[in-house]
Image (cartoon, rainbow, N blue to C red; front, top):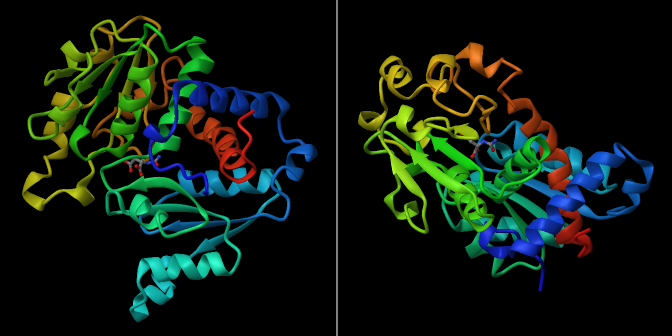
Length: 305
Ligand code: NCD
């Protein structure tokens, strides 16, 4: 059975701990020639059906740091346009030697459905609104790096919760680690299904970030909305955009996170996004590489630490 990573539910708490430790070790060791032996002569395929900058590059860099060959499929120019099914495409990539397929797709649950018919390890790099497990792992790593712990922290996630795979994977991970999770969204952008096991919901950002240790901002997922659902950016910024002024109600040493890509002056002010006193946004991107090294080592070499 291949080791897939389709969602946070595929990992136990001790396994998440070990992956975080493995990533921290990779970080401490820096770019090391010895790492290149870990996945030498292995083949990783990046298969992104939705746009991506960070996640795709991060998986590619991680795979290369571990010595594996990486192939990036240009989906727009693939044989899908000739009528091939996605499963046929994946089975052919597997026949060519793909041992891990990093997959992003607009359709929720598709990676899990396809994984059933594949021997290659499938790593979900975002499936529709459903999950983005490596983002939640790198977010947890970022919080740990800055706060040394997760337990007991108040993490407020704000924005388009309903369409956010980042929010979902983060909620699933953080609540298992004793984090007090708050979700803040305008009416129509909340996912009430996530408001359980102590996860609190707010429709006012000021209330939601009160005394928070971490505020995580999200992009409006326009690509998953009908035109009529898309809010006016100016209004949205006024009510839900994070600024220095609004942040005053959070803890004085609050950290501001964003998975990227951010829309400046829509969900976060440009001044705050660029303020190194609060913003750890580029740290998230940086730590994504070592986190994905840990994940690839696990799915392909069966090693967690
Ligand atoms: C996110 C995604 O694609 O889910 N980006 C990312 O992977 N860092 C968030 C987004 O697109 O808003």
